[in-house]
Length: 174
Image (cartoon, rainbow, N blue to C red; front, side):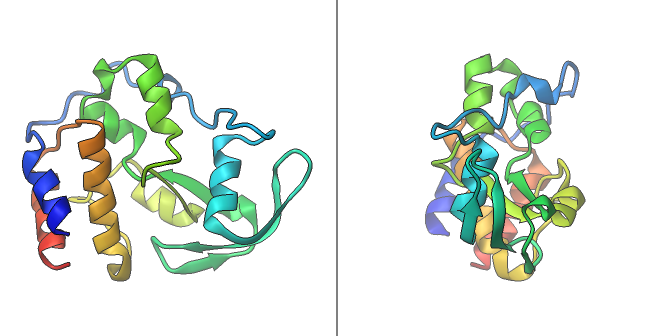
């Protein structure tokens, strides 16, 4: 938490950029990650337990624990791969000025805390909201806040004052 607080202090606080020009298609996602698997399929395997895939890398069975709402899922069709920092939030935070390659990297980053398997219902409840407007269950908030700050820091994104206040409050309690 202390490292996240230090990173948070270094981020630029500014009003959100307008959504003018935003389109999810500007963030090519679920790209080929090798071995016949796309990004979604890799995250399903990474975040699941006893995941069995077919010859096309589709998860045909397994279990997934959704950290956002504490629900265990047994069907991949009930699992969404959440962009922790949503694509629209990234756009409002500076991604409108990124290259297409950087937006694609952001949308498919397997080495960061940016992608997580969660219940479809929790992902839809979150939508494109930031931590000032939506939070996961209490038991996951510290991890969520640390991950959010890491992603924003790693991609040199700005944040608005309400977002910073919410993150500061969470991290001070971790």
